[in-house]
Length: 173
Image (cartoon, rainbow, N blue to C red; front, top):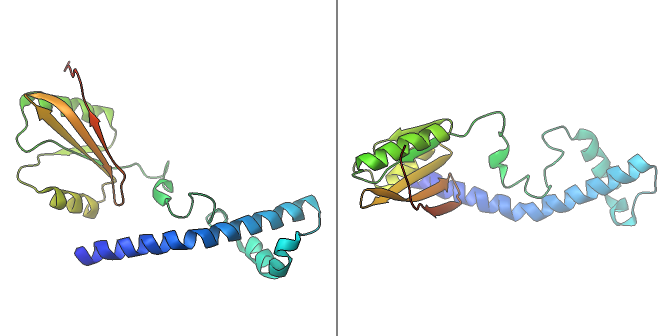
């Protein structure tokens, strides 16, 4: 499992290092396409790359035409938006009270495609690795103090981000 996580981190860093190159190529293709559409002369900055870029523009399809556009290449977490619904794992603290369990039950209704599990003695690292392996896209952990829910941690898998929200004046129905 550690090898897989290390490989995923290396791939992420590698893709991040390629992003400026793809962005520059995207801008050059965009300039070429705009000049060809307008019937203008090809800009001097991309004349030496004209043959390669024209073949690349002709070969682009719906999936590859926006590679290099800001945010399109690296952050592909929204690539399946509208096609595949996100799966959310909801977890409580280790020994939840009835109030917290009722609150999580209500929150489960608010989030579509959410699954609630009993945490038991599962460690946080084990919880995250299990969620990754089973295809969950997000984890939400609910905390309580004195029997009332007071915190919610939302973590997007596999790379984050993670946000902590404090809850105040929670009243169950």
